[in-house]
Image (cartoon, rainbow, N blue to C red):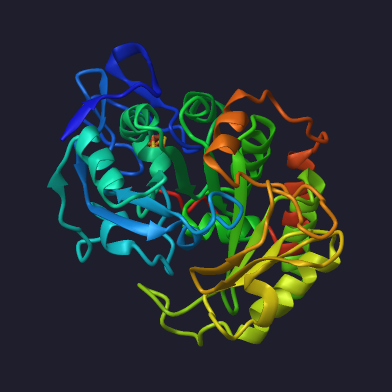
Length: 381
Ligand code: SF4
C-alpha cells in the first residue's frame, strides 16, 4: 500500500533525502526512514497510500479546533507510523507500528473518494488527517484533500509540527486548518520524544505566516512540562507570533508507557490557562477535564467579555457569533466560522509575522532547562 512519494530528493547511488519531516532522513536503497513507513526501493521513495487505520466522524472540537467551523463534524482518517515516539501517545497502537512490536493497528484498503463519500454521508464539513502523524503521510493526505475540495469540504492536519519548509509549501494549497502539538519548550524533552524543538517552532511560525488557520495544543504532563515557567515560555512564544492564536492546554492521563505518574488535575490546566491569559493570549482553553474547568472551555469576547461560544466538552451549547463578530460590541473575532470564511481564507496571501530569532530562543531554552542529551532520535542517516 505505497506509491512513489513527492517529498524527497534523489541523491547519488540510489540514495534519497526525504523532506516530509524535520528528520530529513538520508535513506539508502533498501532502507526505511526514521518513521519506518517511508522507504527507498531502487532509488525511489515509496510512501503510504490507499489505506486507513482509522476513520471516524468526530466533532471538530475534538481535534481540537475551537475557531474553525464550530459545532461541525470532521471526518478523520489516520494511517500508520510517526516520526516521534512519545511515551504518553494516545494513538500508539497505530503510531508506533513497526517501531514497537506490541503496536500494529489494523488497516483497511480505501480510496480517497471513499473517504470523502463517508464524510458526506456523515454530514461532515471537513476532512482531517489525524491519529498518526500526518506529515509522514502528506502525499496521501493531499490525494484525499484534492477530492474533498472538489466536494466542497474543508481540510485539516492534526500534527506534531515537526515539519520542513518543503512540506509546508506542499500542503499550503490543500490544508485549511492546522493544529500543532507544542509539547514542551525544553529542547531536551523534545529529544526524548524523538524530535527537536527548533523545527517545531519554525514550522508554527511558517504555518502562521503562510495563512493556515493555526491552533496550538499543549498537553500538561506532570513532571514533564508542568512548571509555571515552562507554561509561561510557551505562552510568550505564541504571543510573539500573535495573541489571536488559540492555545489549548489539556490534561494528561496515563497512557502507553507513561503510567508512573498521576493524571493532570483540572486545577493544573486552569492555572496553565490563566498563565496564557496573563501573557496576553486572547483565546486560551482548558481541555480534557469537561465540567471541571469552569469557563475555560468557552469563548468570550476579548473586547467586552460577552459569551460567544459556550462549550461542554466537545459539545457546542450555544454560538452567539453574528457574522464572525461579537453580538454585543461587534468586535471581529479571529477564526474560520463558516464555509464562506474557508473560501476567503484560501484567497488570502501571507500574514505579516514579527521576525523571531528561533535559534537564539532555543539556545536560551537550552541554557535554562539544561543541555539536550545525545541525539535519541533514531535517524536513518
Ligand atoms: S522520519 Fe519519515 S517522514 Fe521524516 S524525514 Fe524520515 S522518512 Fe521522511
